[in-house]
Structures are given as C-alpha cells and as structure tokens.
Picture 1: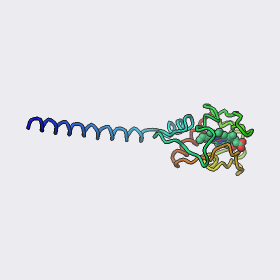
Picture 2: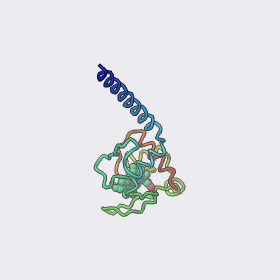
Picture 3: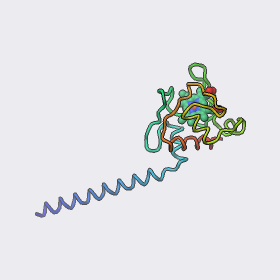
Picture 4: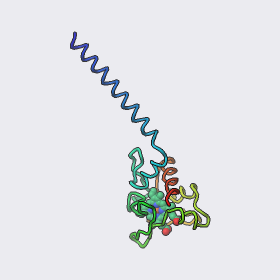
Length: 145
Ligand code: HEC
C-alpha cells in the first residue's frame, strides 16, 4: 500500500513538472520579438520556432546573409552572373525611386518583384514564409544600416 501511494505521488509530481515546462516554453516563443525573429531568419534561414524558410524552387543558398552578407551589404557574385543587392537603408530607401516600403519589400522577398514592378533575377529566391515571418524579416531588412 505504501509503495502504491509513493508511486502515485511520483506520477502526480512528474505530470505537474511536465505541465510547467509546457507552459514556460509556450510563453518563451510568444516572447520572441519581431526584431529577434527577423534577425534569425536573415542570418540563419530558420525562424525563432526553428522552421526553415522555403522558396518556390530550392534556393541556391539557404539564408539571406549567405547571399547578401550578414550586414546586408551584398555585392556577392553568384552563378549565372547575378550580383546580390545591397539591402542597407541607403541603397533600398535613400537612393531608390520609389523608395522601398515594408509592403514592396515583402513583395520583393516573396514574389521577386522590385520596387519599380520589375522581376528580380531568378537567383533571388521567391521565398515562401508565414505572413509573420515575412513581416519580421522585411522589417529587419529596413533596420540594416
Ligand atoms: C541565392 C542568393 C540569394 C539569397 C539566399 C537571397 N537573395 Fe536577395 N537577392 C539576390 C540577388 C542576386 C539579388 C539581385 C537581383 C537582381 O539584381 O535582379 C537579390 C535581390 C534582393 C532584393 C531586391 C533589392 C533591390 O535593390 O531591388 C531584396 C529586397 C532581397 N534580395 C532580399 C532578400 C532577403 C530578405 C533574403 C532572405 C529571406 C534574400 N534576399 C535571400 C540573391 C539572394
């Protein structure tokens, strides 16, 4: 009888622990900021929840940074003659007519259409992401200086 009570107590204790850890991991992922999520996608090609971003056809490289460099300065020569664009504020906003906005950046990233409505070189992947990931990575790009 004592053994039974002891093992029941252990089961109750263990399930309480399991519940606690489930609750705390949920609140951690909700606490990840848009900026941190955008930065992770840009640098690693995976979002804060660990999901790899995908593209319409398999991308030549799997993170933005792998083609545009970690600071977004671009200038990387890729197969087929394409050169990755400079994604820093001066190049995307100050020196562009019309300047990129969050909406046109999201369109460039997901559909490969630039600020003037022209298709980008096919080496730039047409990314498939959740609306939240697309918003977070485009917002992050707008912070690159
Ligand atoms: C395989 C290499 C590659 C990867 C990976 C890549 N890009 Fe690009 N990207 C390019 C190239 C090359 C261009 C220039 C296309 C052109 O000149 O038409 C470009 C252009 C762009 C442009 C348009 C800039 C402009 O001046 O019009 C944006 C915005 C952009 N990339 C954002 C991103 C983001 C954000 C990611 C990650 C989610 C990413 N890219 C991943 C290669 C890449």
